[in-house]
Image (cartoon, rainbow, N blue to C red):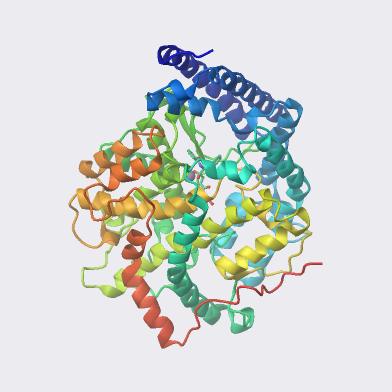
Length: 599
Ligand SMILES: O=C(CCC(O)(O)[C@H](Cc1ccccc1)NC(=O)c1ccccc1)N[C@@H](Cc1c[nH]c2ccccc12)C(=O)O
Ligand SMILES: [Zn+2]
């Protein structure tokens, strides 16, 4: 039965209303679970997950009545294809679908309720306690206890659930025959057959920047912790980099700053000294976005968000931004603490909300990022302006800023930015390398942890401070693995956000080096960004990239690391010079990882 375009439009209008309502119901159930982890709220969420899958299944069948070859309107055919692109919901075995939802909920519950033990009497939650120890302790043994304790409490207890989770997801996603495995489905949201190779090429272009940073930090940490902690293979111990996953090294800036600061760039201290409240952190972030002409938070945001860790119940503390698909209700869930890292995460989560607000009047099916990496990139991009010394001084969180010809101050600032934006790159790349190899069946459960450490040693040049074996499950100690949340989106984000920053600074006519550009209160930059955000996922993401970069020297419809390397160029030169001065050998033995015992 071939129905024509007019009938398709009528169908899609009806679908839009039903889908938004179903999405609202599911989001409320998920919110109830994540803000109050109990058997009942988990069961309720699973029930709504199944209802949503059933809804998607039925509507995909309805949409398949239309003969796409007879639909000339590209917009209508794109919408119909999205109705039919339902992932695991195409799998008719609802018992197995329920099991997938149960396993994911169970693993997230274990992760969110885990308490890592430092000794026989002290066991602490990840946020804020273990995060703070890894960020602030300079005691090697204490760091080792927190690092190991967290993995014993989280990964080890999640391990037994992950193999079944993988095989059920693969069984469900391959049922229709459209996808080879779950990793293939994850990557399909980038609408590019060369995506996997494209990101590999981008990563290789960024390797020299990371290797120079790694060599410099390794030398400085060796001075502090003693050479005996640094094996001849060139690896750095994974637990002394200021972050539980060694993905962001900003917290050890005080240990490794190129020119030990005349004034400590300690935003956390400033927040405390100035009696910042949690709400004020959100108001500061809201002020940034509204200053460039974007949006203020709707009143429901302030009414319904969960911004502080409750004392009387278990919650999923890992931060997230929520769209309740009714054009009015948007929330952040974050166990916010008074630290610089949390202030940046506040801007990150609110960046997601701004994207939601920009596309809220699009058809429901287009209310997504142009690709998942673009949503993360939008979340992060304002931090490139917000963290400049100029901006920090403007809002009173920094007293003195390095003068134009203060090269030492400039190198210090670039170095501090590299501790998050460059240090992150190999981790942002490797998490889904591991997950894709698992979904492909290349990495079996017996070797989950071995593959993880192969990748961590190879790409990050770090090694575990205590012996690891395949009895451990260290990938399970990172939220996104039990949470089933994509990770390559962050790698894509860290590349794209510099392309956008460069383009926005250009169109806003902001002079000076890229790393000192602050788009605050620049409505021209905001308007250009908004033009891209309003597209949602209505067009392939290359068009969204072009929308932001058109008319600038970085004009392109592809990902490019050139703006990121341009931003860090003065630092790269400084690091190369410094590493040469100390005869530092760049890199590490990529095939020999200390402390991994494969029994
Ligand atoms: O996980 C997050 C922040 C949480 C999130 O905002 O990315 C959140 C993750 C999530 C996804 C799906 C379900 C539950 C949580 N993503 C979102 O809320 C979100 C919102 C809209 C679209 C897509 C994702 N950051 C990552 C990596 C990261 C990106 N930028 C950073 C800056 C500093 C430190 C870490 C990061 C991490 O902590 O490893
Ligand atoms: Zn995010």
